[in-house]
Image (tube, rainbow, N blue to C red; front, side, top):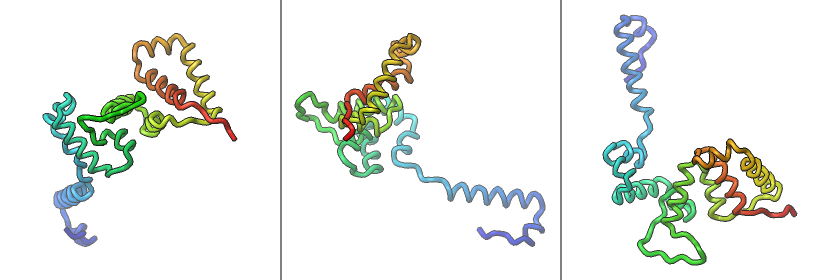
Length: 180
């Protein structure tokens, strides 16, 4: 499709100009539409999506393969957080460690609550924060727990209240480092 000259545009009737604009708009939309990613293609199928959300084994494997292909190898923790780490039928862990599957379930639960991958990584790594940040978060947590309205929301599993408590506990679990 070539761009019409000013003379050609001036010679068009309103109907011809409208048709030409609609044709150019459709061509633009088709050219600029981003191709669907493999996981978007899977989720676009309502039947597949319902089986996936119901815990379908084949569908979960297909999603894992699509996400692995999209994200590439990455390190193991990145794969766990993304839910794409390979899961083996038999996995031996020690010292209270979680299996890969249980780590991925925990990461998915955290993601569903709006916890960022960075905060999830901090939790899994047990990464400490500076003492000043730790103290500020523990004060914030104490303030939340002294607020009766907030405690009631938390007890009723309010999403934001639960998210706030989890974020506070991620910092608590990691501990702190003294400034040198």
